[in-house]
Length: 288
Image 1: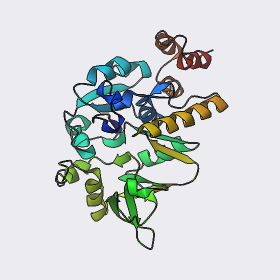
Image 2: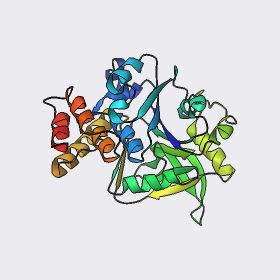
Image 3: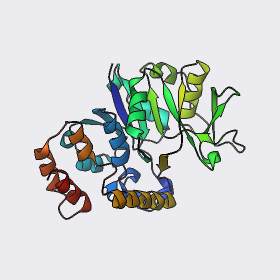
């Protein structure tokens, strides 16, 4: 059974207005690449080739113009419509008929991960046959879904934005699910916000002893670009790392080339639309 990828790129991006009155949040640039390149690159690093992107009707054409059907990167992209932002779990449910019997990696379109062993750790999780979430330590857990452990370190619950967090570990926006997650998804009900909450789904899995937690410790960076300050901080981080190392983060062509999904000729075709840009110049150096 293969694993497919789902990127949630719907929603209104209300915290980024007025910019998001004209453009989808997940197409806003992070340094020199659209935001969605970063979660898409994570899926590609795990060698997931079949990817569904959940978008709104209004934003669909923008994504299609940017990414097409994925063939430029040796992958398959299909767009799934979520007309109203009814929650992460709702976006997942919209993909049910297309996922078929495959396992799933669900990632939010504004989540950015970086670390030296990121590919290995994510690939190990992806290759395991377990529902898995990531635990990541933050300084202000009250802004996220907080993971609660018992005295033995066992996962016992997730509490969304608690006033008094019981731990500093939170759930980043990436989730690894087995296909039977849809059976559990049918059992959860809309919250007071009239959304299907991913935290409710994860707590149901915990209750049934069907969810594991993998802690990501020091040496990893996780950022969600939900505010203008987040955008600035993330762009600065990406810019600093890339300028110091002369290596791109989230370069789709480079990952596809390393995976042997595309060849030099395909990169040359992609460069035609990227002349005189830092991204295009990087691709030119890549195939010299």
